[in-house]
Image (cartoon, helix red, strand yellow):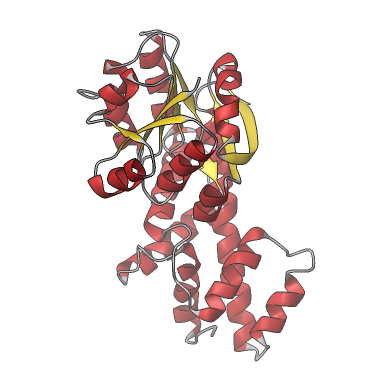
Length: 294
């Protein structure tokens, strides 16, 4: 499978597409806005005018899109991917979407002899650029093994999780852990500052003990430096938390911590900061405490 089609050239998608070209794959790209398409075309990618045209030129089609309706439209819609596929192809959706929607699309794809894998990622923009993403895959295991070399050009940790929807379910569990960790870092940094501790020294000490985490090491310094540049935007995190809430509701599973964090992120959005990185959660805690971590 050497011919790859890639749809969705945003913050994550564009560097992922570049890594596929670096790995020697023949790449065809399509995107809603033209700028990223032209940029990758200048670097050697082919272009397609529609998802159907892209699919007809590909062995594997990868999508990296914002939300469930976007993936449904691109795969199932008029001139969508399924309009241009041939039996034996594999579609790999690396977006974060509803597990139920992933299962629905997989069923539709199977009707035309095509496999659909849900393969969301974790690792943010840095992981996308450095090809160190964690990829969690649901769907047909034989199809997974077929496309594994392609995924290895994009990520460092790749795990098959089970049948359709399992990848997305794993990603939603990942997001619950992430957001509660961001809240923990925000609260600890606020408490330390309020008590008069040296922020840099506090970060250094707690990062070397049992409280160490990716969020602490990567977002803690940004909170101190007031660096709100997004590795992952608040708005996208809120989309993921909406998916978490909807999925948990379908399973009658209470998630009080995740629900609280969603409300705190909403306070950040209310100030027009939805495009900031998720480290901006600390500003909601700061307001409650009447001070700033800086």
